[in-house]
Image (cartoon, rainbow, N blue to C red):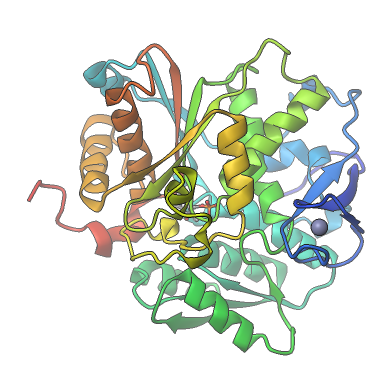
Length: 400
Ligand SMILES: *Cc1c(COP(=O)(O)O)cnc(C)c1O
Ligand SMILES: [Zn+2]
């Protein structure tokens, strides 16, 4: 894809999310050296860059080019990711008495999930910084996306995923020419394996939040939500949180848009809901004070593979978003996810990832408990396409 937007990025520094110490943008950075925490990209946000300038740009996440960290367009690696549709779920809305129920369908991204955004960004930056190859521990979708973008960028790709990951994820990685390693365990065990495989540091580790740029790709969801809703925002956004880049990224975008004055001061930011699988809900446990943090948390596998992240490194950043936005965290059972899949399929013609089904069921549950009101504008994020999860869900289209 040709991007014809002539503009220099205004990336200024990478900032430690814990203490604020800044790091240079012209070299490879992983976690902050000071606190060993994720780095956040900081920009010189100029009010002279107005949202009107977006009007005739391509319908991909790269329309927000100035707010992304790539220094030169020559390194841009794109498969057409982003600008996914926001659909109105009218049938479910009238069934459950929601006044306005929207779903942003990230399953329509290249490689079938919103991981495409983060990896288009991270692999573009890896190319810019002259990295020969990348390695990733993954629950599935991130590995597939990394493999695809590495293929496009002519970079080596090494993917480490749990052996119970549905075949479609493994197989797609092979077709992109990636090296695949299967590990008995969850993504945390894959991370240990990836570190061992990468002992001499020959590949860039693009684990969630261990490099600063996947987050920047994911934040484009926040920009799109605002632009597609004509610079209004929903009252509540429900997001399926694993490592949390989407949650953190969307919130980061809202804050940046406030600085840019793209959002009127009258626009209230949404309450953000982190939806997890009851089988692996470290954030829910910490948020409700049942543990101090997730560092010792043990999770079980779930049909929503992307949610099986027992010890997320971005936990504090996620908690901060939930608190600042007056949001909440909620766990959804496997049975509920299957019910959600049946409803989104049968009522709305959408075959979503179990992660997306969890989000819908969370909306139902929060309506029932009164945390949500049917009068509010609700936006669900479906983060992936259902097709890859066949082994997890085949046959459950009827209630057993
Ligand atoms: C990775 C993934 C998630 C979780 O995303 P994070 O950025 O890790 O919070 C949710 N849904 C799907 C389909 C995923 O692949
Ligand atoms: Zn620090």
